[in-house]
Image (cartoon, rainbow, N blue to C red; front, side, top):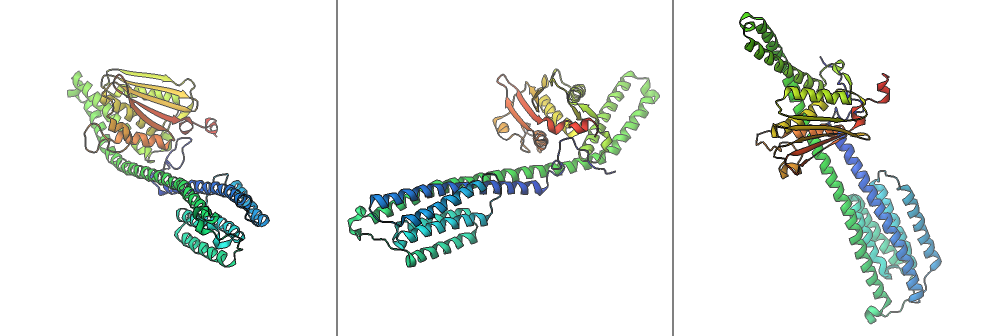
Amino acid sequence: MSTAKPKMPGQTEARNNAASPQPVQSGLDRLDDATGLKNMLQLIQLRWIAVIGQLATIAIVQFGFGIQLPLDPMLKVLGGLVLFNVISLLRWRTQRKVSNSEMFFALLVDVAMLTAQLYLSGGATNPFTFLYLLQVALGAVLLQAWSVWAMVAITTACLVGVAIFGKPLALPLDLENGFSSPHMQGILVCFVLNAALLVTFITRISRNLRERDARLASLRQRAAEEEHIVRMGLLASGAAHELGTPLSTLAVILGDWQRMPPFTADPELQQEIGEMQAQVLRCKTIVSGILLSAGEARGESLTRTSICTFLDDLAEEWRSTRSVASFSYENGVLQDLPMVSDSALKQMIGNVLDNALEASPGWVGLKATRDADTLTLTVTDAGPGFAPGMLAHLGKPYQSSKGRTGGGLGLFLVVNVARTLGGSVTARNRSGGGAIVTITLPLAAITLGKNERHGS
C-alpha cells in the first residue's frame, strides 16, 4: 500500500527529493549570480578609480606640463562616466543575476568613454591608448569566448578610429630627451597604471571565481552524498518489506511456543521466549520505522507529542533496550513545544547514542538544551575519543574507526539527516577522555507551527 509520505512541520519538499539534481542546479545558479554580482561591483570600483585617475591626469597635463586640452568636452565625457557609474551602483546594490550581455555592455561603455577621451586628447599619439589592453584583459576574465573576441575586435577598431580621426595636440617632439619627455613619462605612468590595475582587479576577480568553484564542488559533493543516502534508503526499504513476513512468522511461532506445555512448565524457557518476543517486537518496530521514513507507512501512524515527551520517551526506550551500565540523561528544555514524533529524527539520535555505547559501554550521557530557536542535543561518552582523521572528515561515508568494511555510515546518516532539517553536527574529544557529539536543530524544522497547533 502506497500513500503520501507524512512530513514533519517546517520541512520542505527538498527533504523528500534529496538526490534530485534540482537543488544542485539551483545552487549553481545562485553561485553564478553571486559571483557575477561581485565581479560587476569590482568593475564599478575600477571605474571610480578611472574617474579619479582621469581627473588627476587632466590636471597634471593641463597645469603641470602646460599642454592645452579641450577641458569642456573632456569633463563632459568624464561626467557621463560618473553618471553611468552611479546608475550602475544603484542598479546592482541588491543581489541579482548579472548576465554575460550586461557585463559585456558595461565594458563597452568603458571602452567608449576611453575612446572619447583619447579622441579629444591626441588620438593614437596619447600614451594612454594602452589602456585598451586593460579592457581586453578584463573581458578575457569576465566574459564568454564570443564576447572576448568581440571586445578584441571593438578595441582594435576604436584604436584605428582614434588614429585616423583623433584630434592631435600641440606637443613638443622631444622624444630624444628620454624620460624627461612628457610623452615618455605618460607611457611610464600608463604602464604602471595598467600593471597595478591588472594585478589588483584580476586577482580579486580570480579569487571570486575560485570561491565559486569551491562552493560548487561542495554542492556536488553534497548531492553525491544525498544520492548515496537515497540508494541506501531504497535498499533498506526493500529489506524491510522482505523482513516483514518472517518477523510476523517468528512472532506467531513464539506465541505458540509460549502456550505449549513443555515451555509453560519451565520458567527459564518462558523468560527466554519473552526476551525473544521482545527482540522480535523491536525488530518489527525498526522495520516499521524504515517503511515510515521511506514514505510507505500510513500517515496516521505519526503521533502528536511534544519535545520534552519525545526526548523522554526516546531516552527511556534506548535505556531499556541497550545493555548500558550507566546512562545519564538530562532534559534542560525549559519551554516545551508541540511536535510530531518522526522516526528519522529518532533513528538519528539513536545512531549517535549507539556509537557512544559501542565506544563506552560503561557510561553514556545525553543532554538536551534549548537556546532561543535552537534545540541542542549533546551526547557524551568516556571512550577513547575520535581519531584526528575522523574529526577532520566527520560525516563522510565509510570513515570508520572500527576497521569494518562498509562501516562508518552511522555518523554519515546522522549528519545528512541533520542537514536536511537545517541543522548541523559537530564532534570533539574531551580533555579528560571520551568524545562529545553535538546535534543542533532549528526548532522551526521539528515543531508544529501555530496553525497546526490549533488543528487548522
